[in-house]
Length: 112
Image 1: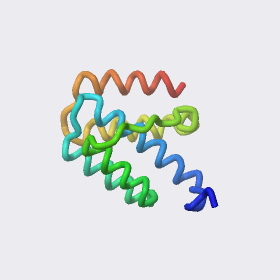
Image 2: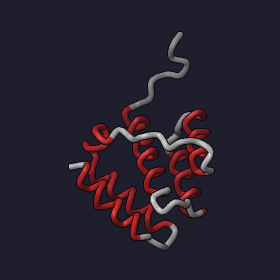
Image 3: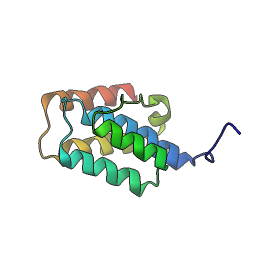
Image 4: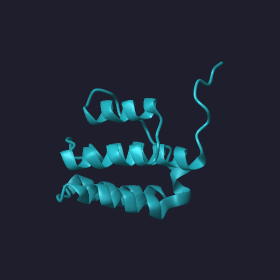
């Protein structure tokens, strides 16, 4: 048995890929605000990510695991949803660092 967990739904896969992108965004200014971490954890739980995925998220937020690369090709089909989520995360700590604003523009370009 090579697959211990059942295949995720398309929505579950989208949520995990989006979360991986949001992790990159959260760390863009070299720190994760408590508000950002809380928003990401709540997003993961709301979207019913697997226990393994939630553990990876927690480790990444704590700076104890490398950030996984998101599949931008998969995210392109829902560009507006992705950009909305990125913007919400950037605004969650009520401070948008210059690096984070530039990152939003880069993501927008990459998803075209």
